[in-house]
Image 1: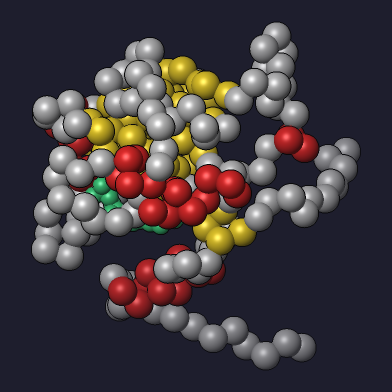
Image 2: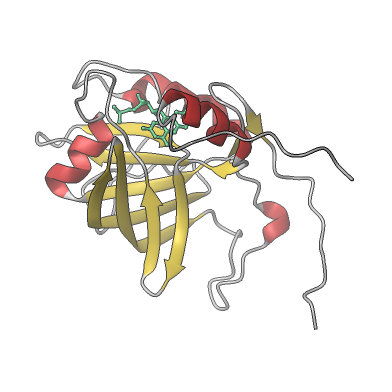
Length: 205
Ligand SMILES: Cc1cc2nc3c(=O)[nH]c(=O)nc-3n(C[C@H](O)[C@H](O)[C@H](O)COP(=O)(O)O)c2cc1C
């Protein structure tokens, strides 16, 4: 018989300890590079790995932009609360370093995109700009924002997907999965994962 599992009381130790454990155990996580705009229309970009797709009718994403240590919402959260629009990007390996560079805390009005060397173009349905170098960009609007203790959960509806030419069939919408390898997040602060080592299991009868 295997040794009994070690037990960690998450409800007694929420916060830093729970994060240390959960964020390294519940992996790999997809990473959203999110663009938003402030009240002056200035773009902001930041990565978030508390992120996933939650449904398809409507196309649903969730995002967890937290507060800074001083209790003020991060710029992404503040912008989503103020104007309810975002573009969610996925990044592959050539873009990973630029994605991480966007996590730097810069003064308001200083663009993470410029600093990371990422060009941006106007979106079609929302005000935040799109990063055309990313293989996937999802133009989104906010459906709901909730807080649970010190967590914030943003529910987004994806309205329009921009997908790198050739990556998805425009008629069938099937993705050429062998050509899609977004990076994933492993342990904080600097652990990442390539997604090229795949295997298949037949669907059960
Ligand atoms: C790969 C990666 C994933 C991250 N995931 C999150 C996350 O899920 N939630 C969060 O609040 N911050 C996350 N961060 C930190 C934010 O990106 C960072 O605080 C950033 O400065 C926020 O920018 P903003 O103030 O422009 O929104 C992550 C950072 C990296 C590098």
